Amino acid sequence: QVQLVESGGGVVQPGRSLRLSCAVSGFSLDYYGMHWVRQAPGKGLEWVAMITYDGRNEHYADSVKGRFTISRDTSKKTVYLQMSSLRVDDTAVYYCARDGASREVDVWGLGTTVTVSS
Amino acid sequence: SYELTQTPSVSVSPGQTVGITCSGDKLGDKDVSWYQQKPGQSPVVVICQNTKRPSGIPERFSGSNSGSTATLTIRGTQAMDEADYYCQAWDSSSVVFGGGTKLTVL
Image 1 (cartoon, chains in turn purple, orange):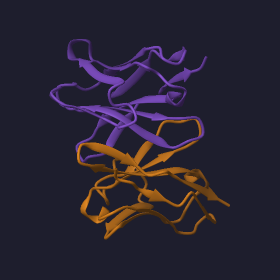
Image 2: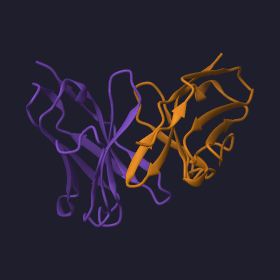
Image 3: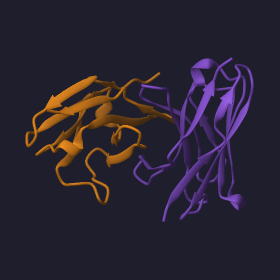
Image 4: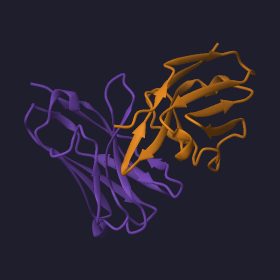
């Protein structure tokens, strides 16, 4: 059974850092790219970052470029999102998601909530 | 940066057909996916590669994409279809989501 479980969310002050984790099961990270997608309260979906199936390339939304870093540890079956210089407008539910074979995001986790507030 | 535009809200009567549109520059040249998100839940893909329906998605969901507009069509709409719907495409190496359409089944 394919499953994605996010963790690491919480309340953090502006300017601080936080690392999110996504534990995957039921498939191998060696064959799938992975995304982080966020959703601010009452708002739509916003793509954040992606790491390719081979781990060689990372892509970021302009809104997080230079502040967020996506990475993975295939041995731990875990994908990470290191977030630094956090801003109030980074407040959102962060979803870990799998890149599908047809250029869709085919599997989503339940999300973890990040609140940036002083 | 590339943008996808959706109508914020659409309403439909049970049993009727509804189309939810997504527009973008030369969108017909891209592969479009559609996601359904119900309150408090994670998104679920209902259409990928413009017209493909993933396993488990009812046949009443269909998609098309031509020119600058992609359309998600729901035939015989049911109350359970009430949700937010998002279109999605790739632009270069970035994923782009539309702003979402809230579908109300009256």
